[in-house]
Amino acid sequence: MKKIDILYVDPIGKIQSGISCYIQQASKLMSATGIITYILTIKQNENIEDFRKRVALFVRENLINLIESPETLHSTKYVEHPKIHIRLHGSKSIGNYFQSLNIRKGDIIEEQNIIEKAKYVSAPSAITEFFSRKVLKIKKDIIIYPNPFYSDNIKNKKNSLKKDQKEIFFIGRGEYLKGIHFIPYLSEFNINFIGDNNLKRFLNKHLNPNEYSFVDGSNGNFISRISLGDIVVVPSLFETWSMVALEALSAYALIVIWSHLGICEYFSKPIDSYIAKPWDIQDFCLKLKMAINQKNNNEQYRNDINLFFDKINSEFIETSTNIFKDNLTNFLLKPTNYQEYPKPINIKQIEGESMRTIKKSKNYLENLSFFLAIQNFSYNYIKIKT
Image (cartoon, rainbow, N blue to C red; front, side, top):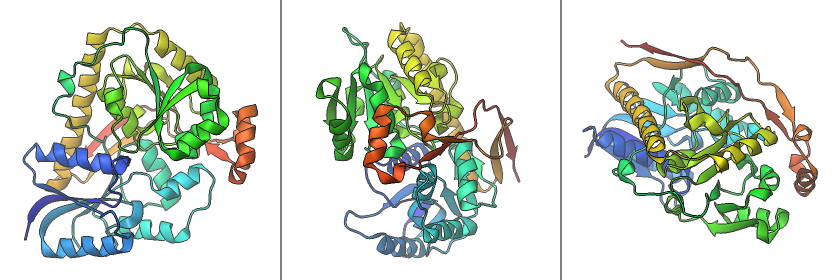
């Protein structure tokens, strides 16, 4: 029998997954504080139903204080335990919502059920809370605190500005949720693409070969390619957090990103200098040009990034520890300019000839509409301890 303080459940088990990366980071950071952690991961050829049963059996056979699991794939379906913590990562249901695709009623019900029986529910951002409540009809309080980043040597990296010019990277899967339909608008920037076969097929279809370079990122080892002063673009439709942005910052890269993505809620200057208005591709291109022309104060930028990591890690440790110790009942991050319903934006408002071509190749995109996320967040932190 194992004595475990926090059991992290990983139903994905892939290095490319933001959920798996988060779980690895969280476990390492909490272990460094003296808390005993354990990660239970789905096996390579294990189906999700068998994994759910294995999780329940593991919980019965070991002494576990707290179980943390994502809502995705509802891994705690069969678990009976007084302290289950569901961390909202934005399930497939949320992704389908953003793409106006069908959402399986069964998935919604299962996610609602595991959330309902959890003692704690949390999210890494206010926008995650907003859309999770909208899709999953969550009634419980949601604890909001950032995802962490654990690294032994982040402050000792020797990355240096490239001699010739900054390189620009897009890192992600070839999915519409990752904003790939914006890529044709960025063709002038000679972007380095790191992704999967779906992304490669998309690029081959919609860009000229001399407009980009592509590297297979299936092994997840992309950070070594990025150096101080490089630029990473993150045009995703929605991100509860953005592990790509976080890891790019660990390499002291500049980030060009939509303002509504979750990680932006924690940015401050100069990191927020290249944040574009949601789905305004002209503003995105403008911010990208600003990043290209930026003359870096390398040492100052390093310091700002290190302070950012110190801030989110301290907040993560504090809140996670209080959840573990049961002395924190709520930790809310409330935007003061919070709209009840985001304004719908039809794809025609942002499309051009390239976009029309893409739409014709994907019937489900013909009626695609997006939801304008809340802008100009202003946050108040509220702690209620027992």
